[in-house]
Image (cartoon, rainbow, N blue to C red; front, top):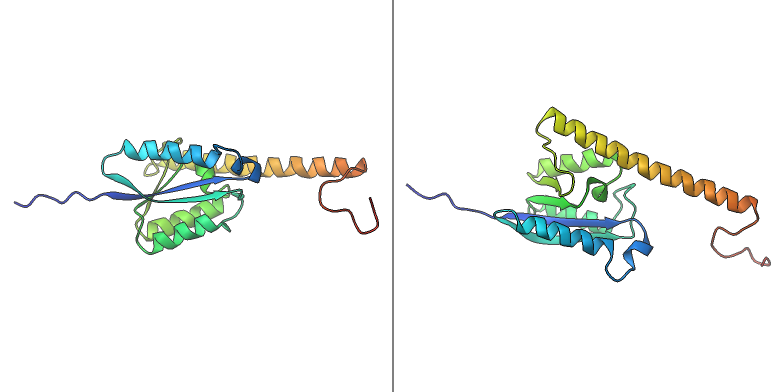
Length: 171
């Protein structure tokens, strides 16, 4: 009888922060996310870090991010077995985009783990919890956007600048 060969699970770490301000501090949130994910991977049997993908200063509202696009190329090339994020909303804040990404992962036999939101998506309750988390992520993004729009409108009503250069001839 031949022993079954033990293979390693090649894990991709994906990290993202939304603002340049978060990305420019000495020990930024992407680095903190990566540290937490590396600890998780080290605690798992036969899991190894294959690649780290990072998008500091990119919104989670869409998938137009260089790190995410490189991750998808590696997924399609068969270089990744598992994608691991700190939270679901680090991958995306859009339920539609999340489901599209998961479809790509499943097509290529790649799993997905959020290290802080552990739920089993093979059960109806796990899928419900995942959907609730995605809905809250989208709500949070839309709420922040609404607050920023309101703040800009209030600043404009008071004659204050919202950034950028003044038109030629105005100071």
